[in-house]
Structure formats: C-alpha cells, structure tokens
Length: 238
Image 1 (cartoon, rainbow, N blue to C red):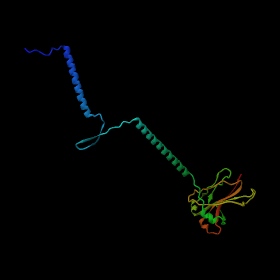
Image 2 (cartoon, rainbow, N blue to C red):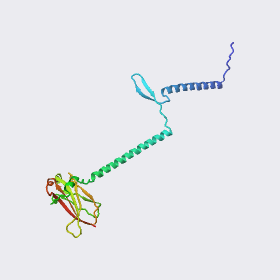
Image 3 (spheres, one colour):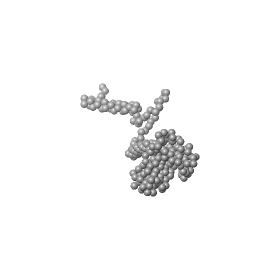
Image 4 (cartoon, rainbow, N blue to C red):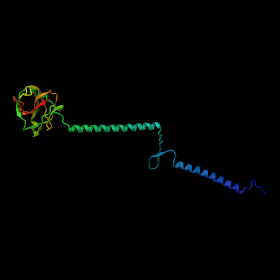
C-alpha cells in the first residue's frame, strides 16, 4: 500500500488556495491586457503623417511641455501683436481724417512770379468785372487772413484768364476820396476749376484801405495797357 505524502486539506484551506489561484490568474490577465492595450494605443502621442499604397507610415512627434518662461514669452508676443494692430488702426484712422479734411479744404492759388516781373509796374485800363464774377469783401477787424473767393458765372472764362491781380492802397486820411499810398501789388495763378481762392495775411495797420481784385485776359497781355477786370472794396481797420 502506497502512503499519501500530501496531507488532507480541510475546507478552509481549499478555499484559500482557490482564492490565491484566482488572484494570480487575474494578475496575469491584467498584465496581458495592458500589453495589448499599449500596443494598440501607445503612451507617447503619435500622428499619422502619410499613407502609402500598402504600408502605413507613422511619424512620432514629441509635444514639448510649456513651462512658465515660454508662456510668459508667448503672452508678451501676443500683447505686442495686439499693440501693433491697434497702432496701425489708429494710423489708418488719422490718415482717413487728414484725407477727408484735405478733400473738404481749399488750397489757395499760387503766386505768379512770371507775371509779377512783367506787369508789376505796367499800367492798365480798368474793366468792370460785375458781368464775370461775384465776390465778398473781407472784414479787416475780425479775421487772421484776408480771403478772396471769386465765383464765376461762367467757369469757361477761366481758360482765358492769364492771372489774378490783387492791389491794396491806403488812404492818407480817412476823409480822402482817393487812396494815395501803395501797399500791395500781387499776382496769382488761376485755377481751371471754379474754386479759386486768394489768401494773404491780415497784417494791415489801422486805417482806411482800398482793395482791388480781378483778372487780366490772355488776349490782352500784349496791349500797351492791358484791361484789368476788377472789383473794388473800401474797408477800414480799427
């Protein structure tokens, strides 16, 4: 008779052995499943870059961590970009305002040096300009500049004008009927549009003045005494 070398196990011991075996099998299964899971979804991020006809090519990219220093640098760059955009917007707004203001403003006529030399001391005959243009006389006491804006009834006449002329004379005595003292004799280039604007500084001293403004036609330039079609203002500066 053979002798049984294994002792007989009671129910409690059998239960403990079964529990241990189940635990060991559970650990083995867990490790096996984890290995399969890592192969299917690796811990390191991967990005599929491209595909060939038969082989899938995978490139691995490591995404860098953003530390505090890098974050601060990025925030500064974003802030600078925002400031540059705001600055550019402000510049564009100012440019638009200047362009709008320039479009609504009138540029004074240029002084004509060409005719100043030839006709400054040449005599002229007086012509009536009432049939050509209207103009308002300035107020010598309230303005910094003396502006003259002739409004032509027929703007086509502007093509025939050689120059505008502005003469200023001062009365020696306020009671005099004729001015005697020469103050200014200036010539200006005409504009081809009905937007002529003649301006001089209002630096006249106190007194009574005669202001004559008008034009001479091109066809009269060779006359011994060209016709000066003019308007007359008699004003007093207090």
